[in-house]
Length: 100
Image (cartoon, rainbow, N blue to C red; front, side):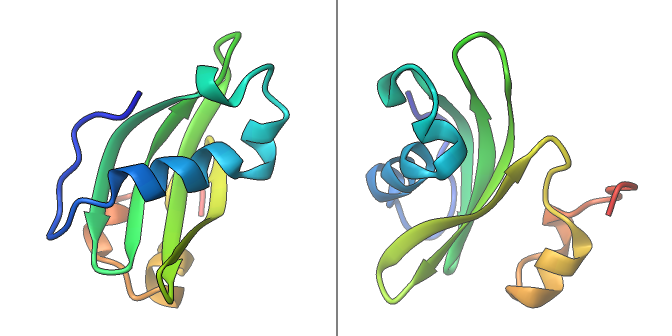
């Protein structure tokens, strides 16, 4: 399930496929049971959260490299300021994340 896609483009299906294919989500009982929440996209990047079967999950960050989306991080920390700088993301994506 994907909801709340915002941004200059709608590549929800490609982003959803990349998130479901991410190594942590492949280990879930069924990739189809991985719930993707609140996709926000800007330029070549997107972020949101994922809920895994059994209640686990966290935030993810995906980057589009030459038309291919891939998850570069997923966890309970969220988007880090170092990632904002590394991938030239909107600064607001990291907010005041105290962990990183």
